[in-house]
Length: 504
Image (cartoon, rainbow, N blue to C red):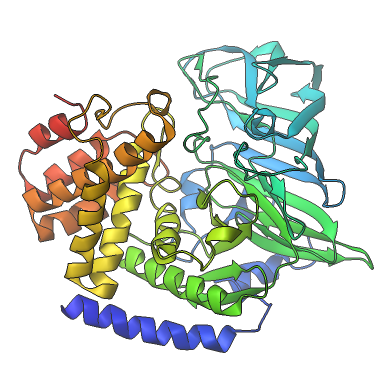
């Protein structure tokens, strides 16, 4: 009861903040103004451009950059043409071979070429360590294979440079995944660059993802992206802008990501409102001049951000952006540091608050703590769905939280004890679209609630924080939260895990 009251007081304060920001299309300054000042007027001021990645991190997590120096480093420079529906760019990827095996080839995933994305990504002019190489396309051009002139030794550093052009489809609709799209106001470019495929012990993960769920599983990386766009648009992306250089017709913006699993770009002429919460700037780019809906979304997101900072762990970046798309095929989708809502869902559905909270929650569970979103989608979806319960408890009271659980249970009852009531640890391609949601989201959240009930409130609160602290920037399976919960309660909940997750 005390926690609910304090959060409600915070909500009132945040609304006041938001109302003060209404009508402003200028973002607040970042949380590291002295570092930004060092970069002003210069593309790179440090000997190692990775140092600039600190500009995207929350002031409490800047040192995480130094602790992860050997993650893949993507440097991309190019031009986005909204009228031509293209992003033309030059990319350099520097990475250390931590696969555990000597590599004689490399594979890049080209997500725009997936049939369900409907776009095109074409690569040219490849070099590996300054030696020319050729590209071979596989799996209907979803995979680009580069045969190496010289094998890459274990723990050796390699640099791959390539040119690419990504073309966005000129249509939307429910027959496409919908996130790669131009809706006349915003051009969305999620994972629209060649992304190095995952490898372990020399084995590459080249499976074509099932579009019933999220598509991208990737280790954390750093991105340094410079983009030229028309002056009539704003650039919204993963990370933080460090410099902007303008001409009469264009602007060139340099963005650094910090430690992120992927990189998403959007260019938009929609206006935005912003607020600063716990040192992070949240911005909502809104459609149809719907300033009331924008403030509503910004308020939900601001409250959720503060709550999750407190109950789970500090959001490690200094920006979180929200955009919309009128693609007509989804409600909300998360990307690192940026979330996308369907224009049709924006402030028009009874569950809009849940939608905003859910996508914000994904920044903790998917982005900071990663998992295989195709093989074990429940790992992030269960925890993210449960953040709706945490939010309802704090903002609307314990009864509202129990109502969330009851709603999950009622939906899950549709398949409970049937032949499609799969164990949680089931890959996406075993489900149809409806069953996937009922299992990964609702059954998964019910499992988390069963853990909470068994170990008690105090231990559960500690388990959330331990899970986040121990697994930031990692890729985990369901045993990571099991370990955190058992450590917090000093008890054995393996039978619960076996029942819900393994189906034993």
